[in-house]
Length: 207
Image (cartoon, rainbow, N blue to C red; front, side, top):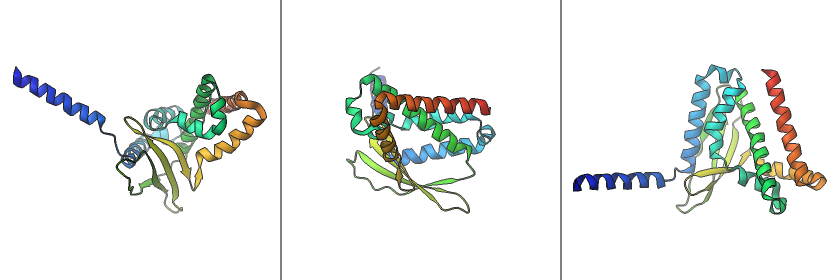
């Protein structure tokens, strides 16, 4: 019985250590990319543009690795500080929906691209890193895509994307700032909600 107790304690300790280990950011990106591309290659419906299946894949495989509250806060800028908790929640939800649309569209034009993850040098105590990647397609110039990532309690998460040198957060910050100046935070929420609703209707009509 004593030996059995030791074995159980040992297993519990092993599990605790395994759960506490945070996957390196470049490994996380590579694993996610490889898994998603494998699904796309094998699923004829996704390659044919099946929005429902693409959305399910994006929701389950891609979005869990993004910090949408952080992304929204950076995109809204200084106005985030004056927003109510309800407005922050609404902004984050609509921003997330907007990025979902962007990702689902990206997979409809997939044509055997490959993704190269660049070597990452990272300090042991780093809490923010840039994971550099390149989307390669035969006969076309590589497209550099960098992931800005922050370390959380149990995983790394993306809080910005830079595509061909253009930051997603910075791009939206200018647009959002103008919208807030003209219509306020509620106006921005409504604009995003309307765009997401119209995009969803267009997708439904295309089926």
